[in-house]
Image (cartoon, rainbow, N blue to C red; front, top):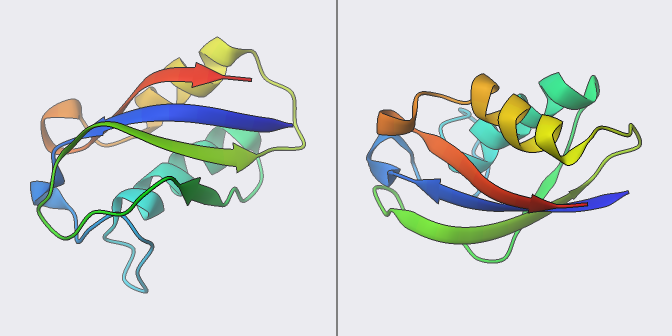
Amino acid sequence: MRHALGLEYDGRAFCGFQAQPDGCSVQDALERALAAIADAPVRVIGAGRTDAGVHATSQVVHFDATVERPLTAWVRGVNAALPPAGVGVVVRAGSG
């Protein structure tokens, strides 16, 4: 099933949105958190990219997952697995 999430983040702690070999990006953090909820690797597709240090207030991403979870699990569960909001990413909305 395909899911979409709306993100908000403070980019100061990240090297940009797109995945990097050293795992320092927003995409890397989000994929690690989603994998914890999905119990499997998850690849995120972003509607755009940001550079290092750039913030976002409503960036949209989507991902496919074979496991079924309620929307609240994707939003609340992922938020619980992400870095703290002051230095990281927050999922604000989602759709299944």
